[in-house]
Length: 391
Ligand code: HEC
Ligand code: HEC
Ligand code: HEC
Ligand code: HEC
Ligand code: HEC
Ligand code: HEC
Ligand code: HEC
Image 1 (cartoon, rainbow, N blue to C red):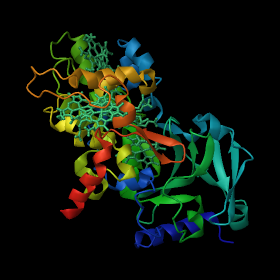
Image 2: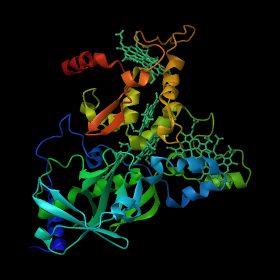
Image 3: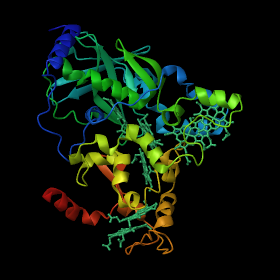
Image 4: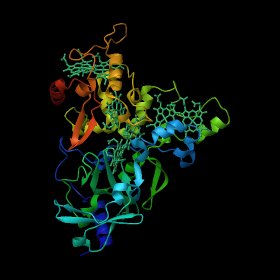
């Protein structure tokens, strides 16, 4: 039995020589990738200097109402310490049999540490689960930071994920076909050092990774993730300046500006490989900004609407009724002819049910649904794919 610390170092050396964990096959169109894989396609987010940020709490003083409704959104809980998550605290004494690998993971909770052991392989050695990514609206996956041999930091995306749909702890998406080259990959997938910073940066307002720790951290997708760093704004307000020095001041931004900000994390079409931007590709439904900008509603309306047309960015999406979304569709598709682009009425159902037929929830994993933001006539997908394949 090899002590866990040594196993991890061996593992890390292997990974750096290019033969770390491998998948048996490319993820098929029916197998959704984990966010670690999705991260591979994502560009680095630009981060202004830490000193320019004021922190989410600082906005509360003057924007209490927005702050209170923001707290209920998924954005307010995207990156927590594992021990802050109630269900993880409740794991003490639980075991999970990983049938694919023939081992049992044992969970231990003591004080602020959540740990996992695999006694049949590593005896009493324990592996800590440090951070919890995801609010739980769909799921929560833990991430642990470890040193790599070159003095950098890599991550281990834990083997198991909490799924809100059936309130169960199951294999993390994308891990089914993962071969464990090393025993210690039993705890999860290695996220290479270039990628782990990106995981954290999409789940935090600002962050930097240094010596296996996240420093200069403002956790979660806070106000300043979208509005930009706020110190200059607070100064401007206090000094009574006319320029508020903040993004998204009423009427001074375009829908395209806004989608560009959301796309830093919800992905833009430039960073998603062409073969993923297809109607038969399940992964596309997780990249709402990519889907929406493919739709003819967006391209043929001279980019006249944005995410905020349907989602108040400070509210939970579930707070809105289906008819509120449909009012947005009907506002354009009412058949009025005086417009420059007279959007047509639906021949099948011109008054109701738009979302369920043109933007339905798509099941990407058992019980896990995402609304498909590529608004389209789905009955024409075969034609669309044939045209793509002939190119
Ligand atoms: C000292 C009080 C104060 C603080 C702190 C403050 N703001 Fe403001 N903010 C204002 C005032 C005053 C306005 C202009 C009047 C209004 O629209 O509420 C404003 C306007 C805004 C607007 C534009 C609203 C519009 O007119 O469209 C945004 C966006 C905004 N603030 C975001 C933030 C964020 C994000 C933070 C935290 C980093 C923050 N504010 C902190 C006082 C403050
Ligand atoms: C810094 C990265 C980042 C930015 C910028 C960002 N998001 Fe998100 N968004 C996330 C993450 C991470 C989640 C997952 C939250 C969770 O775990 O529930 C999310 C979730 C959401 C949800 C579901 C929220 C819920 O309460 O269930 C909506 C809607 C959403 N984002 C819309 C937007 C819009 C609109 C914009 C731009 C105005 C935007 N996001 C900008 C990272 C971001
Ligand atoms: C390019 C930005 C980006 C990167 C990189 C990224 N995420 Fe996310 N993550 C998001 C967004 C946006 C959402 C919300 C929408 C969605 O679920 O796709 C999200 C959602 C999640 C969720 C909630 C479950 C779910 O599917 O909604 C978990 C868990 C998660 N991410 C974990 C991770 C982990 C672990 C990593 C790194 C190994 C990572 N993410 C890297 C942007 C990112
Ligand atoms: C996911 C991105 C995102 C986050 C997070 C976010 N905002 Fe906003 N905010 C926007 C966008 C986009 C608009 C413009 C919306 C519109 O015009 O409909 C906006 C508008 C505003 C406005 C002016 C209009 C209004 O609703 O009052 C204020 C003030 C504001 N935000 C403050 C905040 C504060 C304070 C926080 C944190 C508690 C915050 N925002 C978090 C994206 C965001
Ligand atoms: C800003 C205006 C606008 C909004 C909002 C809008 N659309 Fe569209 N939509 C258009 C335009 C413009 C076209 C292309 C010309 C046409 O077919 O009328 C289009 C095309 C379509 C098509 C045909 C797509 C194809 O692939 O041929 C469907 C279906 C559709 N819209 C449904 C919807 C639904 C459902 C909603 C709400 C979820 C919606 N639209 C919201 C403007 C809009
Ligand atoms: C029961 C499913 C269903 C519902 C509900 C529905 N649609 Fe459709 N819609 C379709 C189908 C199928 C087509 C393609 C019909 C055809 O080939 O002419 C279509 C076509 C369209 C088109 C393209 C029309 C054209 O002639 O190019 C638009 C725009 C559209 N729908 C908008 C909407 C809007 C807006 C709503 C809600 C008020 C809505 N649809 C509700 C199924 C539906
Ligand atoms: C035409 C209306 C419309 C627009 C525009 C729109 N959404 Fe959505 N969005 C929806 C609907 C409908 C749902 C699913 C119902 C719900 O959760 O309330 C949804 C849900 C979501 C979710 C939660 C994940 C899920 O599917 O449960 C995220 C994240 C999201 N949207 C992000 C975005 C982003 C980012 C943009 C801009 C690029 C955007 N949306 C633009 C209608 C829209």
